[in-house]
Amino acid sequence: MSKIYDVAILGAGPAGLSAGIYAGRSRLDTVIVEKGQDGGQIAITDDIENYPGQGPEGESGPALIARMTAQAAKFGVERVSDVVKEVVVEGPVKKLICGKQTIEAKTLIIATGATAKPIGCKREGEFMGRGVSYCATCDANFFEDFEVYVVGGGDSAIQEALYLTKFARKVTVIHRRDELRAAKSLQERAFANPKIEFMWNTVVEELHGDDILSGMTVKDTKTGELREIKADEEDGMFGLFGFIGYNPKSELVEGKLELENGYIKTDENMHTSVPGVFAAGDIRVKSLRQVITAAADGAIAAVQAEHYIQNQH
Ligand code: NAP
Image 1: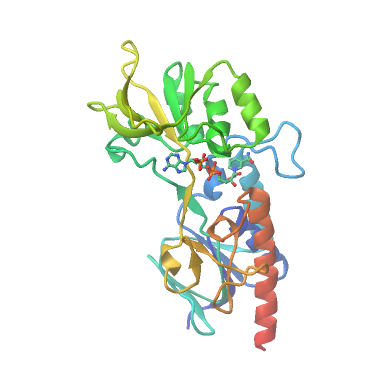
Image 2 (image 1 turned 120 degrees about the vertical axis):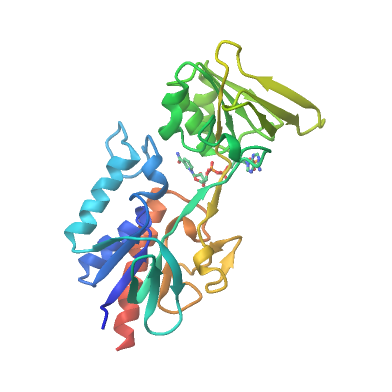
């Protein structure tokens, strides 16, 4: 007979790890299943400066997440590195059917997060890793002294545009409206940065180049006019970073849990539409997707999982 855990957590970002810390510390038999590296989106975040308790100089996402991982391990949380293929939510024993094994648990906490949305222009896929990126921390150094373009007008776009100025010669933000959505403090920093320019009311239509990105067609959203942007002749290429939001990673629970625009619906105690199944972090319908809210969700979900298990007896 295989083991039945008290809590199985799907995803090792801030939400999943926080759930692990709280569940482990409550002496619940807990496992976290993750297919990639720990940290989710913050594993690729260069600078986090708004998580309470950090030093004023801030710190990198991986540094913060490494401490969370160590904390979860300290409280005896097991780790499984595997790809979950199917989730069984019904019945008293929930299941994570993975590539190498099946994990059974009395409760499930879904903390799968969200991934970057593609820009949506023609030939985008062809140039991924050949000029197109969704992670400044990962790829900025490839564009040392080159020109880069950033698509989007939210916090991510402006924060990453600022980061890219440390590497690129010039950073142009392409935004579909004439007003940014990003926090005012970020806007002020971007407007004051001499390396950042703005291309308002513009979207990217199509990418060009032989092997690497060397041109693109952009469209004026007001007039419909198309314009060609070419790489500087000496450079022969430029970078294009997309930061236009995220897609929730909820395919595994589609048709099994109640969703809204692909995000899992929960109450304020992280209960999903199925008893014993909880959701935490960016995967859930919520107004603010941040490390602090993900961590808080994880803590609540773990405590609620404990209450659920107690009430089953
Ligand atoms: P976001 O706030 O949803 O912003 C997405 C941006 O992309 C918007 O400006 C949007 O334009 C634009 N956009 C959306 N679809 C587009 C399309 N098809 N073509 C062109 N542009 C498109 O996403 P985010 O910036 O990734 O932020 C997500 C969440 O994380 C937010 O809650 C944010 O506050 C938070 N966050 C916080 C920080 C921080 O605190 N430092 C850092 C990063 C993220 P419109 O404005 O016209 O809709």
